[in-house]
Length: 150
Image (cartoon, rainbow, N blue to C red):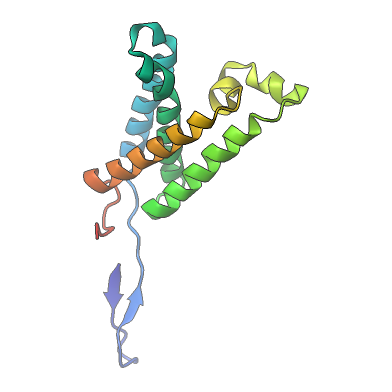
């Protein structure tokens, strides 16, 4: 947040200026999260059971958080997290709906990766962990330049 004093007023005018996320960093992190998430499904038999079961959904939510941060580079970390959770929960709830048209989308590779197939309660926990991981990366890594850490 920056403070600017305008001479004709007798007190400072506070203007909130949010810094942008670096789009290159966001793209690189998405490019890491996506293949790791897909790989956790494809090579599940080579991974410990817990990782194989939950890493994909956790990394999916992390990628959603990073993608929203890429689309809305000036949004606060909190806003980005809330939007990512809302998006993730909406996608999960959409898995309760099984009309032929949406199932035909789900049976494409990209549709299956984005929309998923079946509602599972534990996915909601994975999404919270994935979004939390995104928040931690932004706070610890200082990805959002200029936003105070207090």
